Image (cartoon, rainbow, N blue to C red; front, top):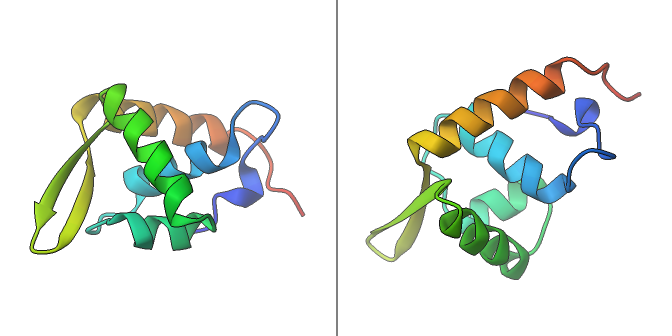
Length: 94
C-alpha cells in the first residue's frame, strides 16, 4: 500500500502518520523492523515513534518468541480510521 501519494505532508509528520496508517490499513502481524521497512525509516526512529504511540495509548506491544508485535488499541484504530479518511480526501501526488 502506498500512502505517500495522498499524504498531505504539510499537515502531518510523515513517518508518524505513515506508521499509523500502515498499522491501521494492513491486517498483518507488525513488528518494528517490518514497519520501519514499510515506511522507509530506521529501526531507532520507529522505536521512538512506537514509544510515543504507546504513551498516547495508540498501540500495544506484545512479545511473541523473540519478536515484539505491534498492534493498535481501540483508540489507535479509531485515529487510524480518521487519518485514512482524511488522507483519502486529498488528490494523489504525481
